[in-house]
Amino acid sequence: MPAKNIVAGLGAVGILAAGIVVGNLKGNGEVEPTTDGGVVAPIKIEKTIEQVAPIAILSASGKKVFVVGEARPKNPVITESDLGKVVMKTDISENALCNVVFEAKLTKQRLPKMPHDLTTKEIDAPDFKVNFGHVNPIMIPGSCDAKKFCIFNTLLHGEECLKAVDLPGYLGSTMGEFLKLPVATQRRFLKQQGKCKIKIHDEMREITCHVPIGDEKADKDADVIFPHGWANRVDLNPMKASIKDGKTVAVDRADVAMGNAEDTREIPKTK
Image 1 (cartoon, helix red, strand yellow):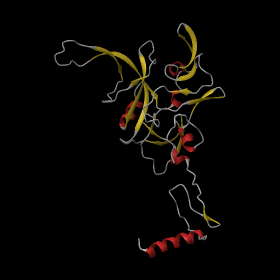
Image 2 (cartoon, one colour):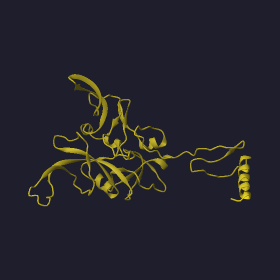
Image 3 (cartoon, helix red, strand yellow):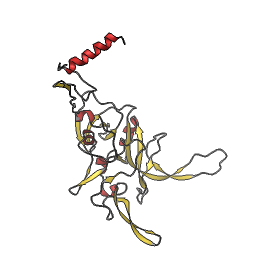
Image 4 (cartoon, one colour):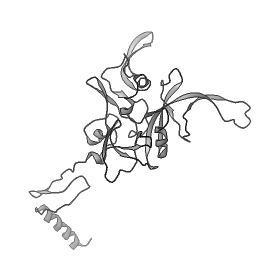
C-alpha cells in the first residue's frame, strides 16, 4: 500500500478516537460501536427468543416434531407447546434432521435367502408399519415389555420425520413429550441416577447406577435422562429433565439458547 494511503487510514482512526460519532455503524451483528470520552466501547445487542428458539414441524394430523437444520421463517412467531417454546412450521426441507422415539412390536421375520443357502432364517425384528429404507432404528436396552413391544430411537431427515410422527407407536421427539406418557411407559426407557448393590469378590458393595425413573433405588432429586444419543450430534439428543418442587420439568431448549437455563450435555448455543 502506498505511504499516503497508510497515512489516510491512520487519519480515519484518529478522527474516530477524537470523539466523532459514526451513526448506525454495526460490528459483527452482536456489538454496536459507540464513543465515550474518545474510547470506542462495544454494546452487546441482545438476541431475541424468536431468533434462537428451536424449529418444530406440524404434521397434517396435528402432531409436532422437533428438527434441526430447517430454515427459520422470515417472521418467526413463538408457540408454547409440549415441545417447549418453538417456532412452528408446516413445511419441511430435506435439510431437516429429527431424533424420534417410537414403540414397535418384535415379530418373526424371514431373512432374504443368500446364494446357495438352502435354509430359511427367522429373526425377531420390529414391525414399524413403514419403510425407512437405509435407516437402522436403535432399540433402547431394557425397554421391551412382556408383549415384545420395544422402544426405538431413530435419526431421520426431511419427509421421513413427518412419516414417523403418524406411526401408531410414535412417542415423541422431546423430553417434554416423554414426561406426558403413562408412567409405566416412562419407566421402560427414562433413567435417573441412583445407588445399586452388587456383589464384588463375595462382598456386597453399593455403586452409582442408572435406574428407571421413580425407582426406589433412584435419587429422588436426580435429573431424568434419555439413555441414548448420537455421537457428535448433541443438538439432536433429547434434553434432560430436572426435579423442581417434587415435579419433573423438562429443560426448554429455548431457555438454554437464551442463557436462562443450563444443560450439562453442552448443547451448541446460538450466538
